[in-house]
Length: 161
Image (cartoon, rainbow, N blue to C red):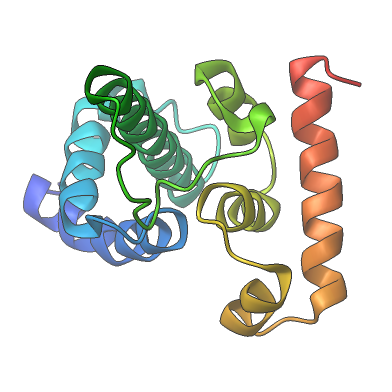
């Protein structure tokens, strides 16, 4: 049975929406469209070695995080050009220094999805550990553990240990 583009989009859209909302609440509809386009463009690169859903998650995370980094850089250029600080917007909070740049985004891709989501929620979206625990409905210590282990993995990937 052959899957059409429409069927594929309907299959992955709920997953993409959920993942984008986890990573970047701002402009989630626009970002979902960007992710879906990238998935369709990148489909020939899917080798089939792993689960298709994991590949979709990886593409979604990579596109969303790069968009966040790009928005932050654009905001910085605007502030530098005008000399006026723009108000912080959701999803563009100042990220931890280890999470800036394309290398860091690639390193973050190699972290398990739950740890990855915790890192993005805390360092990029600026959520507190208590807010994250409440949002994800897990104990505070679980969030702390995900952050500690996940950031350790990112630092190791970046050679910062």
